[in-house]
Length: 158
Image 1 (cartoon, helix red, strand yellow):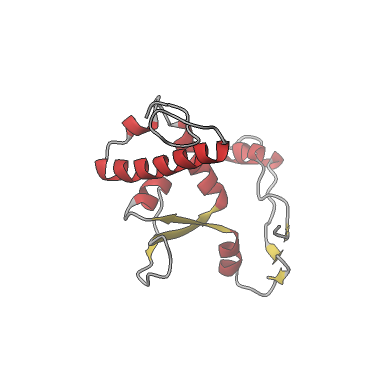
Image 2 (tube, helix red, strand yellow):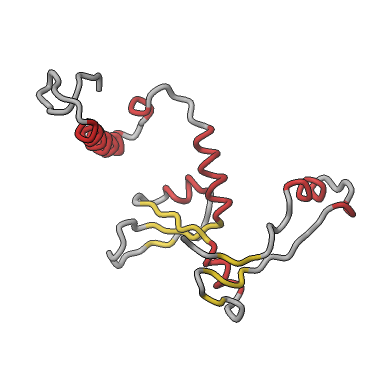
């Protein structure tokens, strides 16, 4: 488990609202933030850019443009060394990543995933992953037999 030493949150949600709407400006509280230690590493003498990167979340993608499109960001870099499993990468603020993921999850409006995939190239890859996870589910469940001859699997619709 990571050990982290830092000041309280930058600005409360209430303070942000007060500042944004220019109401009760005197009541808004602004707090300074600095990361001084992480996992036993003393960061007090490190640059602010380095300390910010330590708190950033690495977002990765395999297909060009996915990270930019899903995270609405710039600054994605391409790893052409072949040393990493994901070619496209960006370091983003953790809260921003969490907010974007929540935004995408809340925007889901389909009854079933597979029919919602419109890019057929991705559809095949997604189906392969879904199939393997389905096989593993039945393997680990300990159930036996189905009409397709798969041990540990009940009959179900694909």
